[in-house]
Length: 155
Image (cartoon, rainbow, N blue to C red; front, side, top):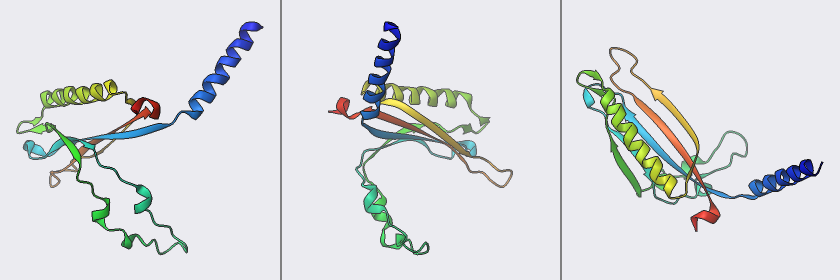
């Protein structure tokens, strides 16, 4: 019975500690081109700028007028970012598995670096806009790596 009470106490303390934890988030995006013959551009993109989403958000009062026209595209764009070169999925001969393995090595290096800086990989999401046939020579494979770090660790 003492063991059960102790474990219950540990669970409650752990729950409330996690519930109070505050995090900052960071998103790293990899964009890998699937344009034939290596003509596309592939990169890891890391935002270094500060943006306040509240300044870019409008409210609809009647459901029709969002007033988003008052928000300029230039207000949304940032100038501070890191670009890490990646290779394209396709080369002249078609899909290039060596390029994919090389990209995996670069992405792994980036993930390891962020982990060493105290970031924890929280979520990963990806999507593809792929080649739709003979007349469609464009496409990308995009992956977003969402990291979090306790605010107490970032100071």
